[in-house]
Amino acid sequence: MNSMTMSQKIIAAHAGRESVRAGELVMAKLDLVLGNDITTPVAIGEFPKFGREKVFDREKIALVPDHFAPNKDIKAAAQCAAMRSFAREQGIVNCFEVGHDCGIEHALLPEKGLVTAGDLVIGADSHTCTYGALGAFSTGVGSTDMAAGMSSGKAWFRVPSAIRVVLKGRPGKWVTGKDLILHLIGMIGVDGARYMSLEFCGDGVGALSVDDRFTVANMAIEAGAKNGIFPADGAALAYLEEHGAKEPRIFSADADAAYEKTVEIDLSSLEPVVAFPHLPSNTRKVREAAGLAIDQVVIGSCTNGRLSDLRIAAEAMAGRPVAPGVRCIVIPATQRIWIAAAKEGLLERFAEAGCVVSTPTCGPCLGGYMGILGKGERCVATTNRNFVGRMGHVESEIYLASPAVAGASAVAGALALPD
Image 1 (spheres, rainbow, N blue to C red):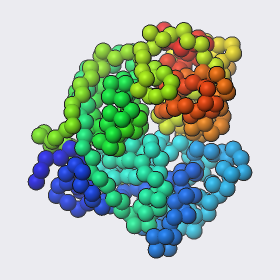
Image 2 (image 1 turned 120 degrees about the vertical axis):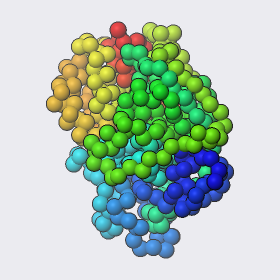
Image 3 (image 1 turned 180 degrees about the horizontal axis):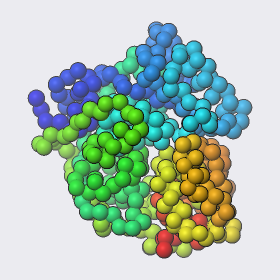
Image 4 (image 1 turned 60 degrees about the horizontal axis):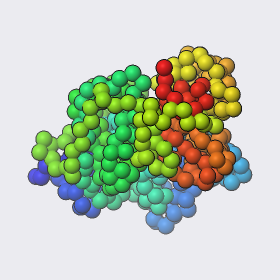
């Protein structure tokens, strides 16, 4: 049996194989199939073509309305209605609704305990790779693959090779998982891990919170990776237990597993990082770019809308008001996070500072609504992409940063480091 990476072992186990090799095409069983209000209606249209009337397992499909929900217009309402109708017809258990303990899909599914270590998950959304933070192999697919997965409970995979990312040291104050992943993408480029696994290891993993790991795994796709994955250590297992996930299956890379290359990062050497337009790889140290005037700040998304992110942003704002002429939009990632933030007084602090606080939604991240940028406007965002026109006008600009930098920038009226 050949040596394997962590991701390869998970694929092999789900393919019923003792081992797999990079580049092989294999059919593997799925633990979960995910769709949202944009991608699911397309999958529903394709579903009948696979010759089955019922989904393979009504408990292993998750449907989450988050991109244009609460419905922003008639077309968005039709998309969500199609998803609800399909869920009722099929008896799908995990179909969520606005309010009702819902939220942004990649924050919601781990929170609901629907993903565990060792799972194989596909989702019709590119940031499905988020669940690698919990030791799962998860990756984004198209709507047709989602339909095939809902029908058969299986999917084809080309087994990925991997890049090993060895972490050491501990991050300093105000340095977060967002800074780590932006630093890494800046190092290797937006196609530096194309169709590979980014496999994180080393003593530094233990210095990252599970929320930090979610952020890092979430943006693995921004380096072109098939998935990002962390070992299921004590912190990850504690998270899984706290959220009622099913029994984990622990996989670890063989000591002599083959990697395309190894990248070493000393967390103690990192500084807050910002990605300038129009690529996540266009990174600079915040201190080298401070003072750039901005029009808007967005704090939220599947990347950085968790409770710890809101706490960091509020701490960085330090009780100061949002600068005149700046719009600051805060979007807790799930209903549960919204409630917890309210109980802690965070939402009141944001509102009193002059922020807009929203119900959970992807909203402005994909240029949907709740914060579209006009011509020439600049936004510091805790989201994951800053492509041309991503958040509005093609001549607007998005600067990707951590919640700490976003909070500090909101009150400074310009790109800024927290005090």
